[in-house]
Length: 198
Length: 198
Image (cartoon, rainbow over all chains, first blue to last red):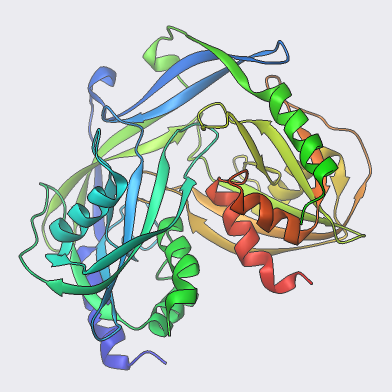
């Protein structure tokens, strides 16, 4: 069972980061970050089907997700605004978009450093998967990092706000059951890392 | 081990449905299916962060995914064009967008019927998760359906092409290892259904 004080600390961060008001903005379509590229796809059987490909910024939105295990076997877990979810705050693992030409493993270590200031001794890929294969080529890469140590400070992008805490693997499963962990990337990380946890 | 003839049948469908040519289309931005809604989100700590919410059609793209188990314990598996992936064809489970006001479980049964003509005797929810929590409110619902039986014909939307085959749970895990099953919804279904498989 997760300790009451730990759950209270998590709830304090959730309270701090929750959305209390939304105000729509008018933005020229061509200046939006989310775009799509419509095309006709010719299949080998002679059929032609129209599809739209999701574009985020100038890339396809492929992401690296990293589950960072510390020397004491606790797992570094981040808390950040997820304004479109019921809770409006997300609990999960460091993750971010892979930059153009960047190796996924390099992106994973970069995101971990930027979001937490931690760096791993060992890191390896657990799995990769298409996030939304019907309308996107985004291929997400999932990493497990071990013996992570604090080596610097957070370096967040503008408009990025990230708090972090550590939990045991069992506590994270409990947080998933309590619906605090609800994003598919973090859920996949919990599943695919299971055999390496003790 | 998956039988050679079964793998050959799967490869025949993949060959039939693969993309051989792409031709971009010019579409007025306002007529695209993929859109976004930019807004400023006010957090409880006083910060204001801009975000864009992904919109598909007029909805948020929440989907129902259904893993259909037949009386013989084989699992109905669909093969369809997934033009943005490396293989250009996806292998997975019936799934589709939940319609406005529709209960997820109703959407799951509807998609199963439309895509395969099968209907389940029992169905229950395995899990739900945010598909892309950074920029979307899409909450996907995952169902396990048992004792499914063929009761009608496929009723596909225009531009929807779906073949299906049956596999045992172990064969599906093998197909996942061989990278034929690569979409996150189908991977989550395989994981979350595990304890109900024998």
